[in-house]
Structures are given as structure tokens and as C-alpha cells.
Image 1 (tube, rainbow, N blue to C red):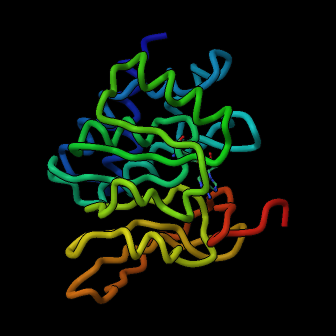
Image 2 (cartoon, rainbow, N blue to C red):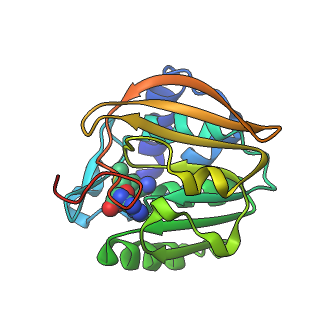
Length: 215
Ligand code: SAM
């Protein structure tokens, strides 16, 4: 299996026709070895146009939605980014290609540990992984220039807003437990400016300012 060819095909057939056009985002998606973020048995499906299971009932998101959310962040390369929902670590690796530092929080121990290991093996030294409830953000390193939430939230968690820098931007799917819309929230003069984008489907954001576990 030639994964580099599969990656190029993913960019050419899924991302560009889907409307993703930031060349830095396309280059990062064409570079990060997505197949190394899934189990060996699933590697040949890693570049398909769909999410894949990563264990613990969770998923690695479809490449297209990773690209859309990353593009919506509008990264120039100097930013400090907080990700809520590390999962496999793939989105964090894409962010690490495009921003200065990435802080990512995952509530499930086993996933956070595996993501850390994969990111270490690939030498993403600008990514810090924490196990915990990401709806509380990661206060120690706040404020963040950008925040990305990769699980479906009932609403924007207060901590995300509080930990966002002035002029910063949050990309978050909000809605009910099964269907959400992608929202972009910017902090301008301390006030939220919201843009609503595509419909999407994420696993639920579970936590203090998210959904109840198992509910
Ligand atoms: N970004 C991930 C990737 O690239 O593989 C995919 C994320 S997956 C769709 C959503 C993740 O959010 C799951 O791993 C889930 O355990 C995690 N999650 C849900 N609620 C969370 C919370 N309150 N804090 C941190 N992680 C949470």
C-alpha cells in the first residue's frame, strides 16, 4: 500500500473538490501520515472519505471535516492552539504543522496515552497532551489564539470563551447529541461574533460543560 499516493489522492479528490483551498492546510493534510493514527487493521482505509473507529467508542474524524475545521481556524504559523478531544492525535498533528504550539485535552486515558505515543514517534514536539475534562479548557497555558473542539457540544463551554485571547477564534460543532452545525466564534473587543457553517456529526463532548456521560 503506497500511503503517500493515497494521501495525495485524498487531497485531490476529497479536499479540493470539497472547497478546501488554503495551500498550507492542503500541504499539512498531504503530509501527516493519517494511517499511523489508526489500528494496523484499518490502515488501508485511513485515507477514505469517512471517519474510522479508534477504540473506546470514539472516532478519528473524516479527512474533509478535519481540513474544513483546520482551515476555519485561519492559522498563520505563530498561534497557540487548544484542542479539546485529542482522540487519535491526528488533528493535533495537522495543527502542529500549521501553528507554533498545540495543547490538546482528552478525557479517555487510553486514547490520550496512545495519541501521545504516536505524536512522540512522529516527533511532534510542539504538542502537549493532557488527560482531563476539556470543557474546563487548560487554564495553565491560557490564553489561546485559537480553540478547536472536536466533539459535539450542547453549547460553547464558558472556559473556552474565557481562555480565548482577544482577536482569537474558536471552531466548535454545537447542537444536539447526534447532529450539530459547525460554529466559528471570534472574540472582537471582548464580544462574540458568530458565523454558522456546515452541518456535521460528532461524538458527544462529555463533561462538566458538555453532555452527561451515558445520557
Ligand atoms: N481530534 C480527534 C482525532 O484527530 O482523532 C478526533 C476526536 S473524536 C471525534 C472526539 C474526542 O473527544 C473523543 O476522543 C472523546 O473521548 C473526546 N472527548 C469528549 N468529551 C471530552 C471532554 N470533555 N474533554 C476532552 N475530550 C473529550
